[in-house]
Length: 259
Image (tube, rainbow, N blue to C red; front, top):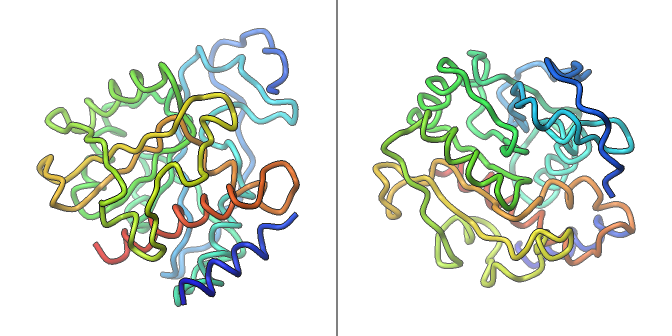
């Protein structure tokens, strides 16, 4: 099954930042999106938040701010499509959902994706809800951040779980063997090297800070696996890298389902 899945990935995956605009303080423009109706199937849930002002001026040429909507909707939908093709899961492949941390709808979705946390600013309510989500069994994938963004991320997570600490995890952890066998974390998903961040590292937040207990959140530091999901059908990123990114994404989903 896993050999066949890897072959499917290889087949399906075939195929600068612009100068910063002047800062525009205040709320950022709204992002247009449509949520697929809840039906109990696995759904890619992307977390929405109001970013800090100092991130406002960093814009991409195609108009998206470097914030929670980065790589939306292509990355979300492609991961769902791969999940359906290589596993027995029956996900929603026609769309995804965007939910706020202050939205009770978040608790419908046991797996959630949070990116660009260098610009994350949590209210007290958002922090409380995220804490409850994690303790009730939710699993969060943190992606697309590097360098000094780590410090803002830790500051925000201290609001969520003051007693929590992030522990670096390595190839032996079960999350890297939940579906695909990932023996080497430098096996190709080196967004840091590819995009100039540095080598990727993986950090986990565990129940009771115990690495032998449930992994509640995984942080892909110096990495951006969503970028690989989004551009898998283009020549922008090598096939091997997009395959490896899909393997990580699938493992994260399967781990969340069985823990």
